[in-house]
Image 1 (tube, helix red, strand yellow):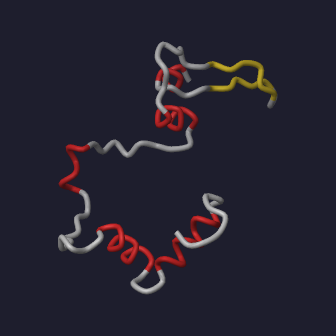
Image 2: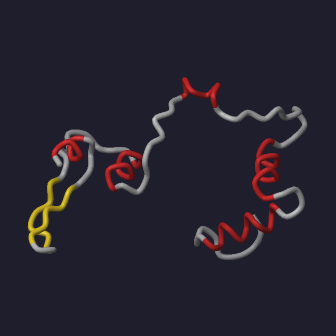
Length: 100
């Protein structure tokens, strides 16, 4: 349990299903948003760093092509990516209406 707290996680101690204590990491420095998300368990780091960039999937893109459009077309299909992306964003509550 203490190893998890050392890594930044907050741990609740329960007795018969009731929280009786909370062990939190020492606040020696202000944590970044990423560190807070890791500590809460909302995300998990992959362990990859910028030194691993050569192992990532790479696309050859002509200089006159928008790389973001290439990624959207790869993810959503060539013709309907704008509508699908807009629906996905609205579905997550990140936008309320209109195209992206």
